Image 1 (cartoon, one colour):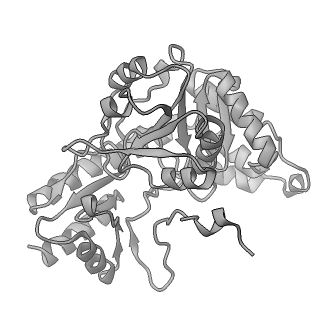
Image 2 (cartoon, rainbow, N blue to C red):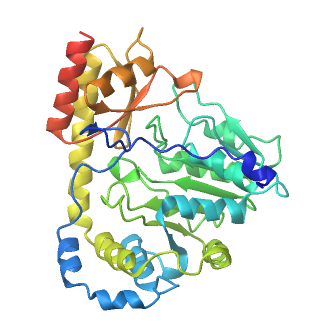
Amino acid sequence: MFTQRFRQLAPYVPGEQPRDRQYLKLNTNECPYPPAPQIADLLRRFDPSRLRLYPDPTMMRLREAIAARHGLSPEQVFTGNGSDEVLSFCFYAFFGADLGTLRLPAFTYSFYPVYCDFYGIPYEKVPLTEAFEVDLDALCATGTAASGIIFANPNAPTGHFWPPERIAAMLKRFRSDRVVVVDEAYVDFGGESVLPLLDAHPNLLIARTLSKSLALAGLRIGYALGHPALIQALFAVKDGFNSYPLDTLAQEIGALAIAEEAYYRNIAARIAATRTRFAAALGQLGWQVLPSRANFVFARRPGIAGQTVYQTLKAEGILVRHFNPPEISDFVRITIGTDPQMDRLLAVVSRLWP
């Protein structure tokens, strides 16, 4: 009844969204603060009769807003249902066995290998450095023919960040006829975008999301920035799959949210400040906390298994994220919430593991 490719499919496993009790959710990197207040006004004013019509398949108003925000033209912007859909279209359009083996870090966003398996793309997992950094030199090293490179910056789940000049050096070494995707889902929390590199590198594509720093995880809006030829390719994939990927309300809210730069910059700064304070406090309690430029930290308590930390905190009503691969199984990823939320976690941690 089922195809062989379906039987071999290993789906992505998202962070828990349990309903058995009220948890302090620090496991899915959601924003602890609400979206811009102007969005509530938009929802009150929205005419529901508009929903009888199909949305704009070009998503032009949203793309124009994103382009204005980043100093680009709309032809350099693609939008989709969350960055996951955008990334999926990237995998379909730019990576494949006919071009070579896709290179990605051994530990990064765990959806990347799922896309590879889904589309039948051969891939190579490049080990991180001893400091848990993405190894840019190894990603672009000569040897195995590469169909492209993809990595998150800041990386997930480690939080490490490479500045644009390091990525520029990598792009100069890598072949210009293969696409490099830099996933900037977490860049607003203390990183720096590779946006200034787009003009010099037509093979560079940037993936972004409104789920994290713009507090719209429940709406599902993502976008890509790049050369018009790459953007046209993504539209071709979209129109070969679903010509109406983003609904009318999402397009309206997304265009409004992307323009509220000051509000969201303030939110990101607050989260970054909380992250710095929390990481220092956790370190004083004997934990190893990796440097992070994201809205989470990756941490371990020497001598205690990560699975034990996860299960013990869950019993206390606090959810963090644990990953099973042996190389990182002692770590847990902790989303940064509000100051009171992180203080609650610190109090529990200091009581459980003094």
